[in-house]
Length: 347
Image 1 (cartoon, helix red, strand yellow):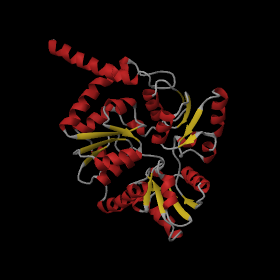
Image 2 (spheres, helix red, strand yellow):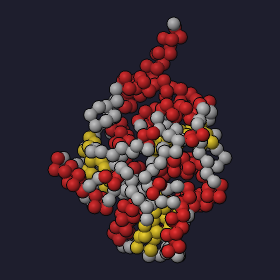
Image 3 (cartoon, helix red, strand yellow):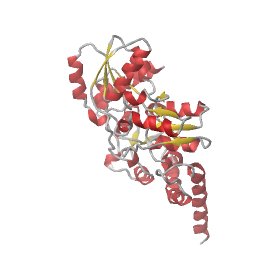
Image 4 (spheres, one colour):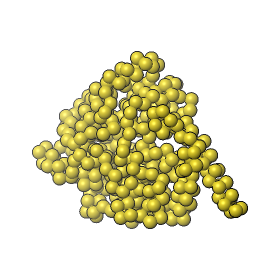
């Protein structure tokens, strides 16, 4: 009986820790995380944090995953670039990547001798799934001599077919550094438009040749939503991700990566922000800036939300085959050159 009470006390202590972090965070448009939610999460966060120490594992959680992962068990949280750096520098034996498949692939490419696990299994991405390496090679054959960049939201095979990959935080600088007045960029068609616009603004215009698709979250936003936000909240600062359309981005106060938006809010003297991005980033801002208000209309990545405390625990204890990440050695070697070129050019 005493041991049971001790366990219950530990779980309640953990629940209160989580609640202190999450009580300001939205679960949906109309409800916040409750102590009951945190009580349900606490046994899993306790177990995961114990198992990861025993296995010398590190957990990387993308900002778009759920708050109980981001604040309950993640050793590092951030966007694709930040987490790629952490994966590259990790001394852990096992990397658990709470994100989508291309991110876990990147971690494996950078750490071929380590075990890399993804709780969500082969969780896709509308961008990464929109183009193949074969299609990129065909595009390059049509435009011989033109350098090719790929967004990090792409498969290992696509990375292997390009000169360098980029993230939303470094894409403009790297695009500007590439030689020539033409540039192939895949697979985000909207980001390609934003690259062309930004390089023109900088006085270094390039013709951007693109193919692929769009983000299933960011392609839903429209300029009319920005105008409506400004009518409803006269002092609002509106932030957008460069995966949004050029027409949307032109209406916003700031356009940048997930990390860029976090930094913008942290440094801004504004008090109310409209966010044209995924729910997970809104949750982080709610947790980290209780003195500010965040207005968010929509945008949930169902792929990212496939990661959970339950399947993270399962991946650590007894991973299913689809949770264990492997990459063909030949493709991995070529893709690593593309990723390392990004790190070089981003300095």
